Length: 305
Image 1 (cartoon, one colour):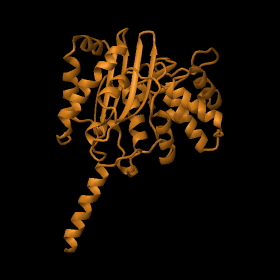
Image 2 (image 1 turned 45 degrees about the horizontal axis):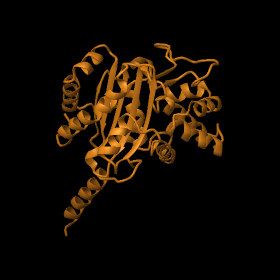
Image 3 (image 1 turned 30 degrees about the horizontal axis):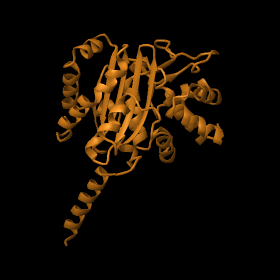
Image 4 (image 1 turned 90 degrees about the vertical axis):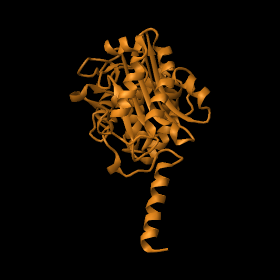
């Protein structure tokens, strides 16, 4: 074998392995991580809008800015594609922003600002898997609003940005009274945009939240969800072998869900986030899975546009 032939075979093998990583987090160089807006795919965007607008109720909610959806195609780690509707529109997201507390706690533990005790580990899991409000409040008390705000606005993460509609925010204890630290744009206590939640999962999947090991630990906490509703209810039926990492939220008419789906087949590896302000929101979130998977299937084989 010539040197040139060997080199070409090496490059092909490296590309094949990188696009067929079986585990999470994905091992990828920092230079390959991009803002999601730079990964926006025109074809996927058009297909997503077409599928969502085909449902009259969804079309109306989107027009009223009462429904936001974001999708990240992770089938090829070096050709990530993104599409969203009302992506920068910030909404009340109930328990979904508990993922902000999780990241802030991990950041604090890594920096020696918070001790990683068995109680903290238990509360982090309860807060995410069971959406336990008492555990979330205990974690807020340990970490503090100032720390949560600093992590969300940290340029390393860019999970809350006043210049682009806000994003992830926790500024009130869950199910309790006490002082607050509401976000500056709409004065929401527990807020999110689909763009920033998608970014959170994108960084998590690529091992970039705190560091690789902490991202892996966060995935373990967010995996095997104990609440089997919304996105999870559908995906457990149609993709029982897929690994699911998620956090949802519900309060009054506000329904939200966020999930990282990692199937054995690379064709079913994606992030899906939905924020809805409507009494039917829980059912709408369940009904989103099929059309979104249709969009991913249509655009998967097409080059990034």
